[in-house]
Length: 255
Image 1 (cartoon, rainbow, N blue to C red):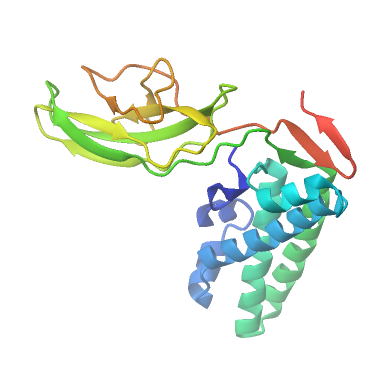
Image 2: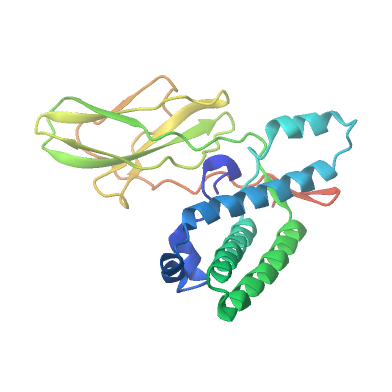
């Protein structure tokens, strides 16, 4: 699962799972869906942070730790993702109503406000999923070429960080490189987090067909070069799972 600070929680197209005509509404009313997704994420972030801080006393050493850490260890669980989608749709229909004063939009606004409230309550009842040693989403890898025996081809590449517990974080955005005949792709990573002990390279010849190419994690200063041909392997995972859930004053261990 992705971490809260890895980027956008949901994409505009995902909102269609809840409201099939949302892209049309946004286009008709001139509403920036990306901006609403960001505003909803900021609102959710504030509520999650307040929830975590309320469960620690001001004198508690962990209170200052939490303020410094922010939400970097919070996992985007399915319940959190649903809350964010409902909140985004409420913001979209609020703007649509204010643009047209259309009662149909008001009904949708009220509906999604109620759904957002209900889904936030479900989320906090399930608990805030936390990771003990969080690995942020990597930047898109740097791609280059070197001399080699491969034919001309296009390669798609994503990378992940690995920590000392052999946990793997969320994959980076996919990079793309086209090589000429006699060239091999080279993959490099940038800005490794302090807790990363290595990284994995996922490469393929289609965005949906990338698979791991290294048998053990590469060092954070190492690069990966295609030797002869791409090897079959597993695709990238979804990221770190929560190690525990914070529910009221209780910590519920996972599993």
